[in-house]
Image (cartoon, rainbow, N blue to C red; front, side, top):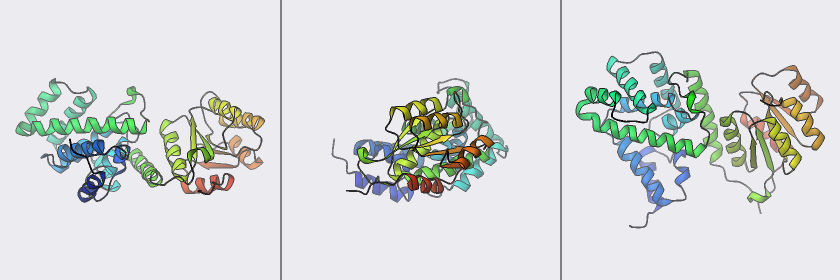
Length: 324
């Protein structure tokens, strides 16, 4: 088996897609894995003989059924065809949600969704697809295998899957799709930044939110900006982390399970009176406003927040060391 040149693989990806999408980053350090990942996606998706419209519809519709909160954005917008744009992806979801499909397309999507959620098999869904597609059935099988692999790859990459019982093909509205695409845009923008100091020299930001996708988003953004990041899924664990030491700044949601954010902030102050704490909330109440106005918290951000504004505030309270 010959040696794989990663630069030649990346050159081929750029030639085909116009860029090297973020989804390939986990394989960047393993040339053979990068080549295998690209070859599979190229041969079984991009060069799959099924019509492009059908492939796009299948990817978009099955993203609704995936447990990963970012799957719709990554698979539909960051990975696929050269002319894919967030706007065209949203249009696809609006078409699906509004039932603006041809009868055969709607039937194909329904059967494919059933096949996908049941993890395949040779049951009625596969037989129905065979009847619809005829000689194109093997191409559909290859595409479904690629979609399933992509979903697992993304889920493992982000580590932000939601519980399986939330897999509902109708759960993502066009507005939710738009929100996740915008959030993924931010992730890809910051993931490409290089830390400015060695890991052991970076200030530590503690990201506290009960939603795993928000914690992952903050982790990617702050690490990309040069900070080390720790996470906590609730404010009680956040208080324990502060008491244990080693935290230089906290970004915390106000409305949290187990212990409210403002009460957690008061307990943090007892352990670390000078620790900068930034609060965020999708529903700002008077207690949070008072905490910010009194100086108990250093800032209060309304969700959805502007990440550049938040980063500016973080840097103001927690300057980065200069690179050696």
